[in-house]
Image (cartoon, rainbow, N blue to C red):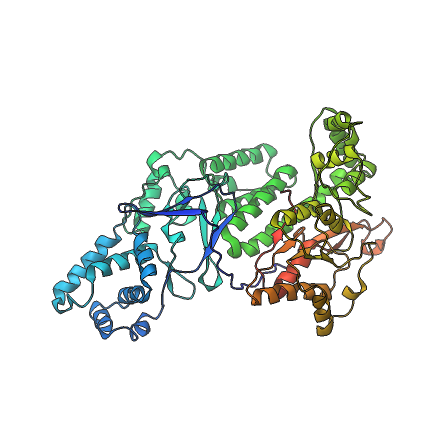
Length: 597
């Protein structure tokens, strides 16, 4: 079953100072450039509308001067007079900001509106002094060219995002969130350089996939004769394959050679169009499904890319498809786990291959999103359980016997077993990444000092300790035993009592907790909601978004008559725990730290 998260209203957040630089040109209108380098997927800002024109224009005009209703009746159109009336209601500073948006280069909206005004005044000259008609034409043209129709039916104009120029190779995507707040996200695979123009596409994705001649013709049709003069259109070179070629006839039974050809075409398209697109994410997902059997590693990469692309481009609109991609990726990763299972022939061969690469001096990085591992714990597990010879690395030989000053690394119990010697510390720094360590690193970078930590082992807490974050509120004791007060039945008194013990929490951190309870989720929810109601956003950090976690497998004689033997034993995953808190708190997103920083 696919879970759709609630569409709660997202608050507007202004960009950091100097992040976006707006300028105005008499010929080309407003433009926006980046004040610093921006990364792929980075949220630039969330902004409220500068102007809103109500859907029911005739009703809106009843509160305007009577002449507006008369003009609307003679024009046979209440929308344009309503837009001008809404503009005149704005404070002077906001009116000026809207006028400074101007019109995109090549737009004919002002000429078309002026022509309509001229025809109206020839028919009804008695209204020639009723309104400031040149200003009317200018405002209506800007609103019609720059404005967006919201789901509520209102027409909105935004000061920053609507100032961005169009490009057929855009580097930013816009999403209008519940309540009319608009979010800007970077979709350029390589990010946006400092002083580079921040651009969006004014047309649907399928238009961007067309060659130059067809694309320009479609843009003219969609944009009332407007001719695109972006850099891509000027160059006129679109030598690339078609996405339709990639997905045509895809099947898991397709020969490996044919699959590799499709992958090559997909790479060529990415090179020609180096920005995220929902349609590319969809095709990647289909190719990944076809590659699972013969090209498992390629499939894994495609699923990960599709998930990122889907979330970056579609945001809230892509939640359902993102859940579907996550499910397939999780299933694939479960099948790939056998590669490092020392009890299987393929697992033994994989260990031999990895050790051979280590012996040759290759740097191999081992990553887990299981927050119940410290970096040292994972290193010990790799060496003892999977027979990976990390202490045979060139780094190990170089550092042996040297006295090193080592930065905080985290220690561990159970799967952690404490901080090692200088060589161990350097090995884990170079070869091991865990979500617990990444989480602690992230909290340190953000200045978070008092998080509420949901966990069932001390590993996550020990990583926090190692980074100097010691004032946390955890659901587990220092000795590794769960705190009994979090295992009780949920009541309003227990929730309030637990919150009252630590009311000054500055974040909620959710690890893979094998003692997860409704009471823990309720306490986390109160921290989030009560902070929000007081005008403060409390960060929610998840160590993983896996739906389920693997506890092991049943033995070969277990319930053999029901064919339950040799089956994987699944438990509620870290992501499901986080999602339960998000649903309860009405959150749209959490910060996920399953990957290295």
